[in-house]
Structure formats: structure tokens, C-alpha cells
Image (cartoon, rainbow, N blue to C red; front, side):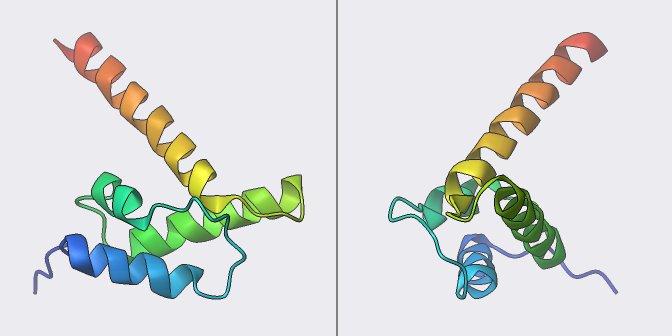
Length: 88
């Protein structure tokens, strides 16, 4: 049985659910993160949030999860662009 990935609103809800008990900076842009996670499953988004939060916990006690998530996506996008260039 195929379950398609969540749409924009679904991803937005998943992000809010998995960050609801986390201290976040005021500049968290859930809409931008939801845009960047197109094609991700709910489990993928949960793993991303957990991974970034653990990374931030190791660095310091003031979590800045949103910036770390965006940073991770920037790296993924650059790697994807580089991969496409090398594949052609």
C-alpha cells in the first residue's frame, strides 16, 4: 500500500508537532522549512528535527534549530546540484 508524502500543510503540521516542546528562536520559519522538505515523509521530517536538535544540544544549551535545519538543507541542495553537474 503506497502512502504519498504529506503535502505542504501536512509537513507544516508535522514540523509543529515535533518541535512543540523545544525552545526555538523567534525567527523560526516553519513555512520555509515545509517548502524545503517537499517529498519528505513524516518520518523523514521527524528524523531531521531530532537530528538537528541533538546536534544543537551538543553545541550549546540555547537551541537554534531553525537555522540548523536551513543550513542542512543548503548543504543538501549544493550536493544535489553538484551531483547533477557530475552526472551529465
